[in-house]
Length: 342
Image 1 (cartoon, rainbow, N blue to C red):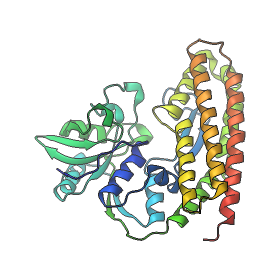
Image 2: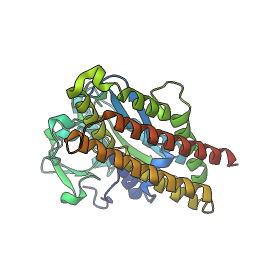
Image 3: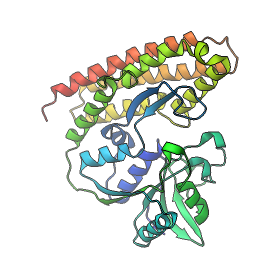
């Protein structure tokens, strides 16, 4: 049992896990800085049902562990990651790390973690991050940044954790994937890391030429939504919109919540640049975008539940307006990045 592990609430499972791991090794950074330096903000609109239960899928965040890799690279933090074909080898590796006093991050299906009893079979997500910090009496001790309000540390049997780590989920299967930190530097150039994080996020949101990515993908989504009912029928249209909402604001995260996180990141980043007024202004603007995304979520819920008249064009108009706001925000961010001399 790792006694002194800092079990703290997180904003998001990946960044929260990284924050607590870094704290364990003596580096205390806000989760928002980890998110921004790791370029966690993203947007992809797949014009097909990549996510089960949808006709078209929307992803609002970068792929799992990408924040870890980009943040670590920019901050000169060393870590190791493993995937396994053998379930036994995966569990043996976990045990060997615990015996050495090394906390290990695992990726597991949130539906198959028994302490998340509120999730159903329709909420399958095999890339949830949690930290294993001990093993006793045939159970693993889990520090899950999303489960603090329900009693602190969690326990799970050996078989339950093994099954959750090797959930069958098609392209999203993680094969027992795990990672752990091997070294944390005493010195690093956080200003340069911030600039690189912002620069990559601007690239993802503005420069990928395919129409599915970034701001282009947001405009693409707004355009395609207007023909959802014609393409898929009323029932499938609203099932798709409901799942897109869940991916944005609940199960997948990334909608309004990530805009607030990014706003806080820019506000914190500004402190390293003499309270840069341009960064602070863009930070405020991202908070406005978060507010607009919350209104979009509320409108979608009300229409889906029949509390107000259903009108997909209204939702498409709101998505289009948000795309214009995000385009403006990232263009201003790029202007700021280009002025930096580091």
